[in-house]
Length: 327
Image (cartoon, rainbow, N blue to C red; front, side, top):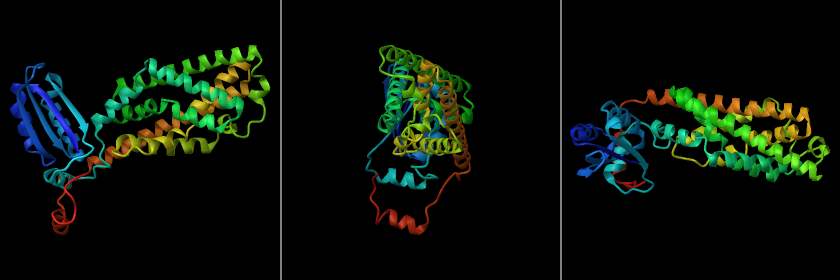
């Protein structure tokens, strides 16, 4: 269930209220007359089944609500309502599978913004990855993978392609290029310092590293894992279930590969630079393609969901007898 809050000038209130009242996905509807100061007008609130959110958002945009006021969608984690339960049952699809495209687009822009926080996490994760490579430590490699913020921007590439948002495509690509560039440069400078101090030698970079050798030896499995992990990650981002993201972070080697590229540049180990550079490219391309294909499939499936789903008579009887009216 989602809470939809619409703030509009009074001239649009009746049209917005009528649109929401006619939707079978809306379980409750409230109008706060004169509650809005900017813009001067009213606030309309509705509880909406997640599966029906896209249609309502599109129709509200057609009314020009986003140009004269605002729309906000917030998840309701716990609700107890018989009308809400019935609205959820009669709305096509499953709430766990529903993709709310406005929510996905907003999150993509947030995760792809090139800011100090994004660059800091990219740099710190790459520095940790560099230390992990020197120590041949799988634990530190996993820590660097989890810390890296790059997956949000990579997933945003798929969102931009599917939803044809050229601005988002540019924002995400810029974040990845600049983010990895800054992280590699800073890690290379740090590696030069450790080289001058004698803490790290060329042998530490090019010697046998059985626990982290996968970072600089890309193969077909690198691409396959990136595709599968990204597909799972996109499903987690677009659905109501986010438990799969941690598995995505520790399945792909983008950050460790960037760390090894930085070390290779600092020590002139060009085989390391080539191998890890290819690993980095394979992972990013595989994840971007998987994100695009997964989102395209989700969009195609939801475009074919019937306008209305009528529960069977047997299910209708069970709604009022066996199952609770809360989620």
